[in-house]
Length: 174
Image 1 (spheres, rainbow, N blue to C red):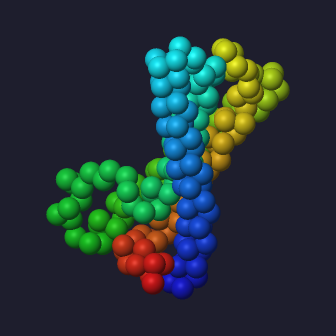
Image 2 (tube, one colour):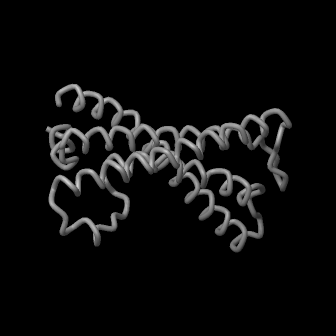
């Protein structure tokens, strides 16, 4: 259990850094949009590229924070089928759910990796009032999906070993 706690704590630090990056990006987008609105409607001087930069930042904001949300058990859970099951059977279903999540996001990361490589190879760029390459965003989305896959696997291992993730969370915070 101590090894799992150490791994979770170290991995949680990586995910927290990704969450901070996501938060700062959210703040930067908010400032950009508010400034653009004030300048556009107050002085008729819009900021070129606001739409393109916002579109590019949104996937980063979302995918860099998904694994951190899973780390803190913040995703929506539907427990209508499992809430009345015995603890052992509920644990089996939780492990299966985490493994299915890991499998789906591993597959999505693999497919995204190939899409990002293709984007890099063809030099895909955002076209609009400003131009910038798309492939770094695609690689960041893949990284976010890989991080989420790893978190699902850690959660599956935790459940399989019979640990309550709320207890693990408390152990990390102490």
